[in-house]
Image 1 (tube, rainbow, N blue to C red):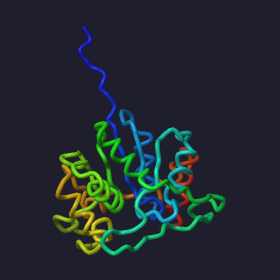
Image 2 (cartoon, one colour; image 1 turned 60 degrees about the vertical axis):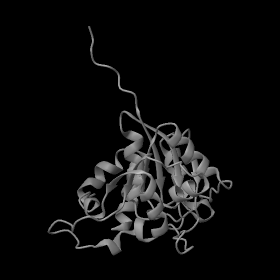
Image 3 (cartoon, rainbow, N blue to C red; image 1 turned 180 degrees about the horizontal axis):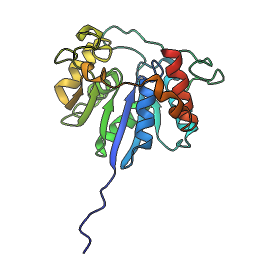
Image 4 (cartoon, rainbow, N blue to C red; image 1 turned 45 degrees about the vertical axis):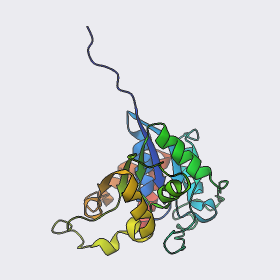
Length: 227
């Protein structure tokens, strides 16, 4: 008798401040190509006018995945009200013909809340403002919800890596109030700043990345420009 059960896909919701350095686009590409992962929703944060959402939509279009629900979320930091603008739409990073993709008020919170209520693990790779707004608007939404965040600082980076401290942890420092709210409610897994410094994309990787398809070519071009 066949004993191996077919595993249900892991449901993931991605919350991102897409459109700065190429890291978030690489994370999206990884999730889209990872067997056993079902990407059930994407929300953008610190997203004035929906430009970050437009960049996400472009990446989804390149791989024929326009079916993934997407919504532009919080515009600014709860702590300071500041907005961090993404890289502009120009041919170094993003095609200049792209237009912003704003969402209706509350649409991002609806999508994030629906994903969490449906059993998805939420992965935050940008500032944590959307999570905090969801908990403020609908208390209890994050109670023990599984959330993986790229942020936090528990020990120094390994020898040979940049000696960055907590002050360089953008995702936490940009909206410290949101970080406090998230930490008080969710079941958190931290991918700390020193850990992220060990994830390298090297120049030697770019030819293979370019040859992998339209999204890979975009990531290679962006990485080369960013370097």
